[in-house]
Image 1: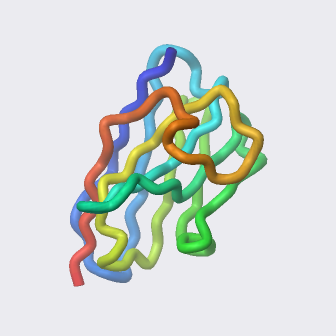
Image 2 (image 1 turned 30 degrees about the vertical axis):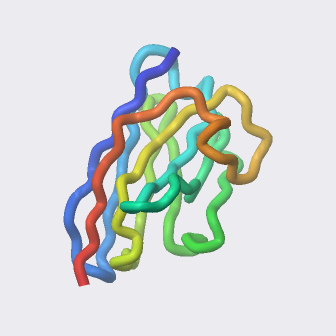
Image 3 (image 1 turned 60 degrees about the vertical axis):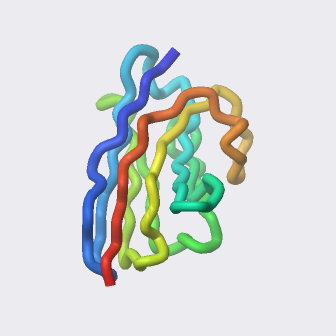
Length: 125
């Protein structure tokens, strides 16, 4: 199995950018599709992006298309989420998650087997 760890969260002003990284340990990350999720206080965890095992298919939530970009470097065992023009409403804990079974599209949390501990992203106005 794989262990995941997010980094790169923090406090930024609205309109600024952050880049989150998801490092994989144990089993190689290239075996997995990776999804990014976020969970704001009092809300359900929602998918924002997903990428297949080799990076040639990426899917995004409508709310972040053109704003977020997911990429992966299987040689470095990392997956990144570039977030631009952040808005206050996007304050949340952001998670990366891994699944062996992904045929495209955004899937709910129940489809992912392995999770990182989460990274807090706070956007101030």
